[in-house]
Length: 322
Length: 131
Image 1 (cartoon, chains in turn blue, orange):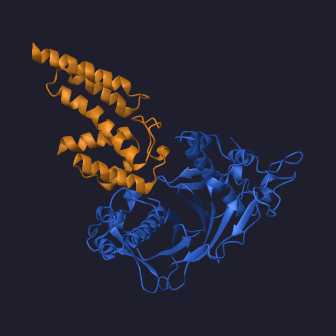
Image 2 (cartoon, rainbow over the protein chains, first blue to last red):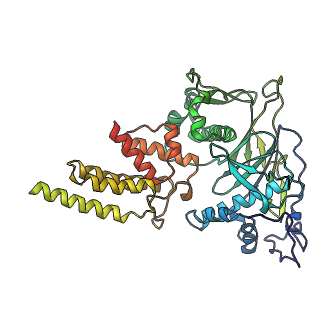
Image 3 (cartoon, chains in turn cyan, orange):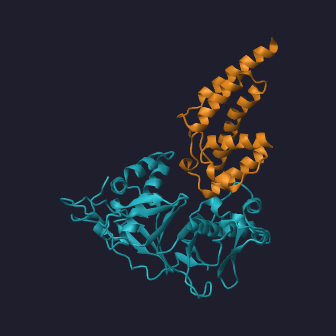
């Protein structure tokens, strides 16, 4: 179904009543719905990543949720309803609404959130499908989404592959940390974790490593088996750079799966709202620059789409670990 | 005589078990039905068919525990892990639990291809039979 790029609405859309007394940026009163998504500062370079996140537990107003639901394509709505139970259905719906509204912000408000279409690469990674009939402009936008039960994040980069993973710091695994690490991580990572005697600290380091590895695999877009966790090591160095390197005993054959393992990946790891670790990974093909010499620029916003956006990077809410 | 009635009752048990599994005619479930009929005459029939239903049941238990699903959540063989709320860490823990329970090793590319309870059970039976 072809979506119209411009949305015309007659009359004012009733605004959901703000849950807090603090003044909020007004949503929309007539005019185009998507025009109320303010344009963020542009992505300055390929080394900059913008992350927009929302907290599903805070979004319970039915008219707001209906507004978001309306942005989804029929197949997205169907997929959301296939989730088991109302909570998972709501999260799935919000995830797509977050993606569409976020992408729309980076098109100078020229593309309605409803209009985006998506395809999957041959490994199943979702990408934007731009109309090739010349009817719409294109932007070299790359995105990746990550969910936890209490936060959904969407990372955006320009002209480069991006992966993002968010995890609750206190996420408890059913399995023992070291046995998980032995099964899935590299020997050097297992050694690193084994040396940590405090179990809370060990669990946190495990989660940090997990998010870093997930972010890389998601950036690569080849799925879990495209970059098995035990074939590459992530390491937080003392100077806070994050290194990624091939594991010691790894593909010596001409397995094309290993060709992409390189040092051309940049990472950022941050604590978010003191409850989460967030890892972001982008490909950086700039030649001649020393790996990690210029850090990845990260900006983070908390959003209630159409209602309120808050820049949280540069505050205590985002604590860079790298 | 005893052997014949054992086979007959096994077939009935198997049919009962398979008919309680709801399905939508997917490839794997059709194969299961076909196996049930073909194996009727095989002396290995009962073990083979029972293993399928039993495997599915065990996979469901493991998934229920890993995802902390309440008893009100109805699991079906075609239930997708992602639709039950599993993220990637849940999935690797499920795979590890399956490996421990069934004494198998699941390679990454196999792990990636199991997205439902039935697919996990099929892979387990395939790997367990092969070992």
